[in-house]
Image 1 (tube, rainbow, N blue to C red):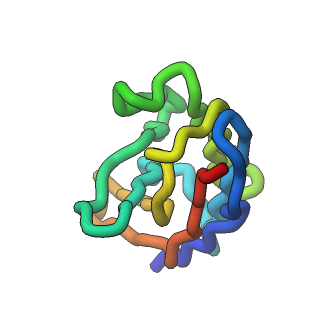
Image 2 (cartoon, one colour; image 1 turned 30 degrees about the vertical axis):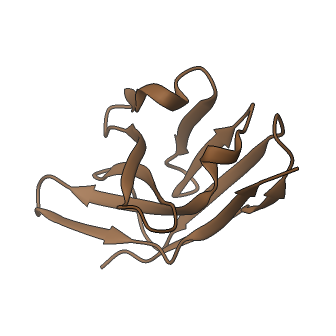
Length: 116
């Protein structure tokens, strides 16, 4: 089982930046890692994914603003968020999915608030 711990959330003004981190308790080399978010009253939605081989994918409304990356040596995934907007306000969750075991794991979430 993989435990995920997110950090780096907080409050920031529109146009600001935050860097989220997700530290895994074990190796992430065989997991597809992703960041999701859930705003109040809304369903959890995908934000960005980094595949096992390193390729990345983003939902349209964060392209050009957010960057997902991973460091397999540190078992950590990052989400660099720039040009933040109020609509980016949400709880951000880290996800690890193993296509080999067909299991996935979630972190506890970290709050991001964008407000002037």
